[in-house]
Image (cartoon, rainbow, N blue to C red; front, side, top):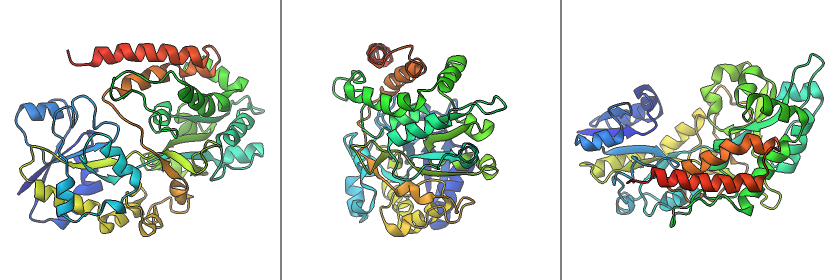
Length: 397
């Protein structure tokens, strides 16, 4: 029996096998797993057009509803009855990972792993300037203070930046669970007080120093992660969890650690949203029962324990047994890995096929906002107007 799998990230077969395929083949020796890598000519829409039947579809929460993905191509399948038949207890999962998929209108997949935002920091920079390290449970106000103290020029004229982040990840995993687009009207909803507060707190306040503004003015962008991992002039970087495994060589030669993402003072204990990856049975699968057996296996405690130990991604089972072994078999086992579980995840935002249009308009204006060249009110009004134009242009004609 051949189960055909498609991972919409375009990951090569080696990555698919390392994460899931090898263990699936070991567990189900009678199944042949045919993995189709996303590439030119083998996009999901191409496969649908040429009649290729996908049994197992793999995707992240932010992509599932996008154009030419699972739902847009009508391949979604509500797995509720299969889940019941196979005795899978939904209460064992981290609750927001289930809530997030249900926001699309059905239980179209089960989470297999997830990630969240953590605050990486370079200990050597803190030591150089005599500033205390960040701590789990810090507020954004405390981070802003650290950032200002570490945005300095040293005696050799080298400019250091206190804090930065990947704006796209910050926005799409925002702690206030703010949506980009209203799911009913499909109009952008980014010009409001909540988005203003979020941007002011997380991006503007930590960047209000001459050194930071000069850097942004000169480079025309928010300081990127390369300043942290390569130049090593960025003291703190808020980014998703598995970045450290993607940049393992650089991290192995750096004196670093991480802590939980800062919190809003009136939302203590609430971190960033989770960003799960799902295994989905498709509506056209000829082997729904068999594919469900695979999904039951990768969401089992046996598999999740193994995944958790690697530290590559967060497990989705909400049990102490799975969490406490996180990253214990990785080269970073001595780091503050339990920071990933320090806060509860923020509620999942409502997602639509046009979120990227709105997100893109905000991120485009962020350098001007932090530099004070554009006030937040004007920026968000402009971003919302341009987002709606982009949404209209992206809608099927």
